[in-house]
Image 1: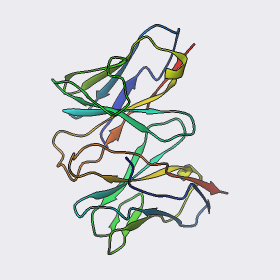
Image 2: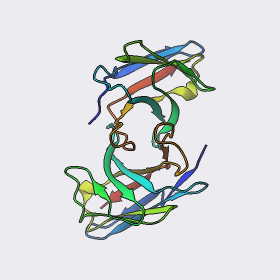
Image 3: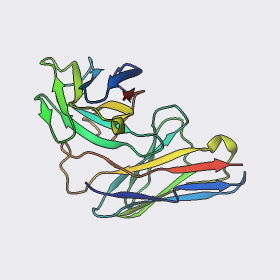
Length: 119
Length: 111
């Protein structure tokens, strides 16, 4: 199946700093990518939909100024957690659909996840 | 918001079939049912999806009831590596893209 790669796989940062997480589709193009957050023993929560060449669409309750999303190309989306605090510590996962897949046939391909720990 | 209900946890003996139920009583006519699983600390993995007909692939079978209000994922011969959280997702057709995860079923395969 198609491969989605995230980097870094884990990161530790100090409170108040910003952290950037990259999400790449390695063997397909994606006009849309999705960012999820997962706290321990909880399910994945959709944060935002990243659209290539346009602004991201954020889910209710997600601060767009805190979680900056950039989707500059068909294979790369980035999530920047600005002024990170300990409560932002979580497992961040991106996903993407193949641009060429039909609307009803395409599954989402998920990255391996990036674990953020804010001290 | 998730539109599915799944049991919180299940056990299955190794080598036996694992049958994971999912209730999606409010599913709309053109919404698909997707199944993903997540092994600890990894990204979710696609298993199978379907609309009306039963589906089978190399990983599993998906049985959808005639009224489409529920479905069952079947792992025919469960192995220890199948221990994971299994998510049943109904994909909203109006957006065409977003997947909203429910709480899933934590399946433990017992030796």
